[in-house]
Length: 187
Image 1 (cartoon, rainbow, N blue to C red):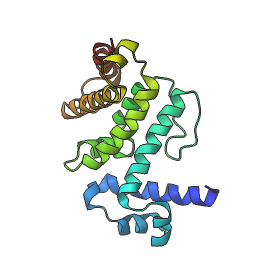
Image 2: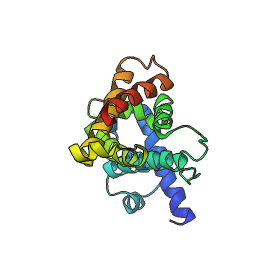
Image 3: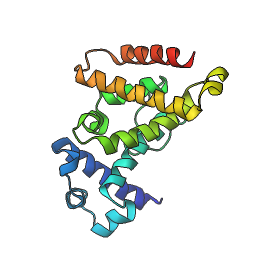
Image 4: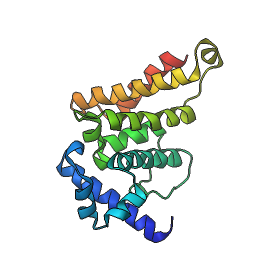
């Protein structure tokens, strides 16, 4: 992407995030995103096929940012470039959730969250595959894809429990709970 395309894409992301702050995802129209971003309809569709693809891209950018940071790369992500975390991937993700970056908690806990949760889990699966070391004995007992899916589902359920409980526990505590569960799954 050239600089102009990146700027347009960033404007669309920013408009979408601004609208998410005011409205539920299901009530946001492409026209509202276009108006807020001050771009043409054709320009929007050049970057994203639908509003759902925009949501998917937002989720992918978050996970690319987290993985890049975990791998010591600075990455060039329009919404996360100033983030300089030195913690592990799951801790980093919890911090973004705690800060509710890009209304992530709102998207995760909304009534019609199936689409976002499916995008979230799809990217989380990639992160789990890259960040979790699997014992050889587990790979022999069951398919790795099953284990990865189970870990991702556990993470999502852990986050949902935390949200519903009012986020009383610190992110470090929640990551500790999650890793304790992982130890039980992987060992």
